[in-house]
Length: 406
Image (cartoon, rainbow, N blue to C red; front, side, top):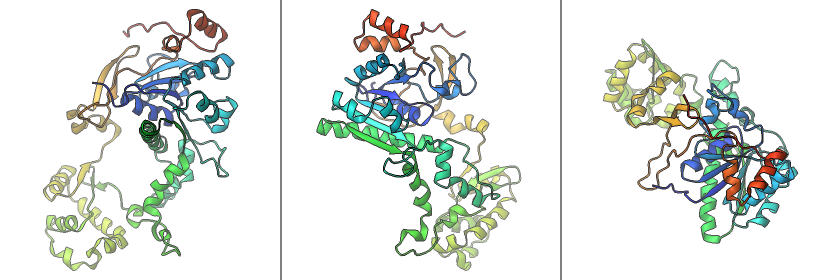
């Protein structure tokens, strides 16, 4: 079975996490993703434990279903090779600042003159019409720019902290993948490609203000920003006698069921704070504190059973270790032990979505640096002598076939 994007060729000039995650999603859906790397390789090749140099665990999880082509784009020969690939590519995606693409003479104006059907996607920090246009951006910086650490401080000990996952890189990576798919559909109707800018900052602002715009939604303002339930200090996993349980008592029926569960059904009708979602939100800190005091009286297993019986959404609180052993993920075959062609057995997370046709799949492991340089250059029409000249000049790099691990 072929993927939905089978036949689509993507020139992936991205590195680190945001761009590679986007292109991995596209590769999972069947696209031929050519990962164009400088001679030193993507810096994340050195990230995490590894069995062999430049094949770190962090790299393996965002670069499957790709082929690696080494091109030194600062050399004329390397740039010329990329432009030859542009002739037949469907998408070119990059995540450096547009100013860097201009220095390489790889702007939209230049590449679109070679291929009018090309979809040219830039994923970078900030929109290009504002004062932040040329600023560098990383996940931590954009978390700060959108105020995420300030929200963590507000509900915590007062210390601003970054969320301990690369939430911006992965979220914007998904946005980039969505944009590519939509642009491919548009091209089917018009026959023309287009240039797309996806700024991290502007993409992430709705993830904060979508919940927290509050009274500032209205002109003039109807009140301060902030969503009280999200900012309640007691909006945490509830402590039990032997651990934690995550539960959400949200709508009228769930609150009524909770009081029935603890043997005090009359409290739902008698407490004016519980009249509706608006009054509950006004008093959410006190209500969450009340629930927390009650949950402390039982074990995690007891409360999970009670919440399930009352049809109140609840789940155990996982750690990194226990998440890997989650029974649901085990049952659906989410973690797959696969044989990587150079790294041996590795544990991968399969594509989450299931399709009745053209299902996403893992077809190849993350590539070694320059593993497919010769193969791709031959596809572009380069002869043996021309490839040898590129290698000699340092514009590309070719490696020997991988020995079987172990």
